[in-house]
Length: 254
Image: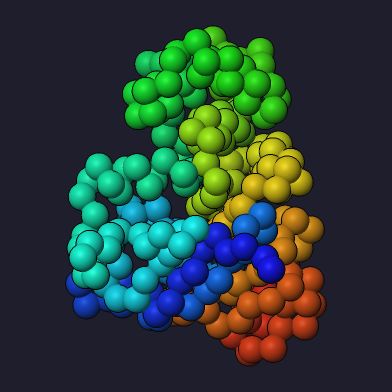
């Protein structure tokens, strides 16, 4: 039986009067690549942020490896996690954003080492050794002692991926990781993500890169209006969408 990484049931989220997520039901197996597409404002990024506890749920629940997100069970009752408990759970989830969010005053190597040393209290030597391996993995060994300002956007995003991997997460979330890049730099970031997928990393990718979703994704989700409109095997959804709204969206992006 396939192990489940994420189970979401009835997930809702509102910002004031705006209901952004309207009852998301979803199961994601371990080792799979799930790609989420859809128009701006459809709730894609908010759903990722709920998984990583950057947003709190208004309703429903999310389980990550069987553990509820944002809450704990004590004496048979649910209680909100405190900040320390949320941070501990977040250690197992890496997230890469549209913007690179690197510390400008730190070298590439220092950026990658900061969280494992400070958060997980690992020895700096051990983390540096792992960081060098990760830099080689993303093709940036020669940039270890460079500062972010000297790197291209694609290079900075690859460093951001290495930084997330330095925490040794079991799940990686990508929130439109190539949308801020010049077109000629997109490929180098997608290549790193392909290698992660090949290595068996569980990934959820919010993306506009339809080719990546088709070639690398195991499952494709189309969201609109805060809900899942259609989902299935990527090539099937892209070639033969069943819902009219999906057809309209794909006609504009393919």
